[in-house]
Image 1 (cartoon, one colour):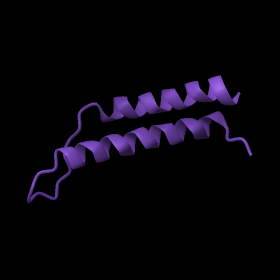
Image 2 (spheres, rainbow, N blue to C red):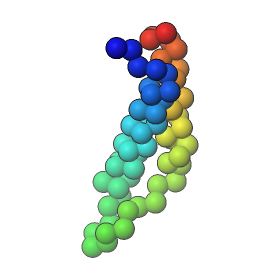
Image 3 (cartoon, rainbow, N blue to C red):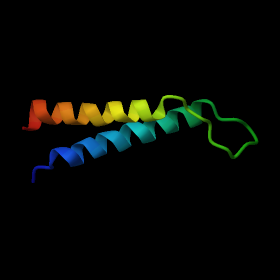
Image 4 (tube, rainbow, N blue to C red):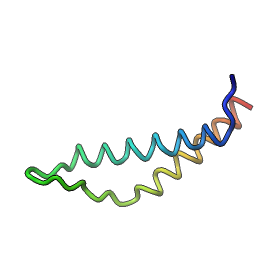
Length: 62
């Protein structure tokens, strides 16, 4: 079963979003605080994952 391009793009978006947030929250964890760290550029990095998913789909799966 071949996935559609929009699903690959969404998977790329979510993968990059979650990995970026986890990276910053684990790397810059503040002791004694339950608040997550603000990571500037999160949405830009997630949209890069969206674009990369679409690009790889066009190049290899189309």
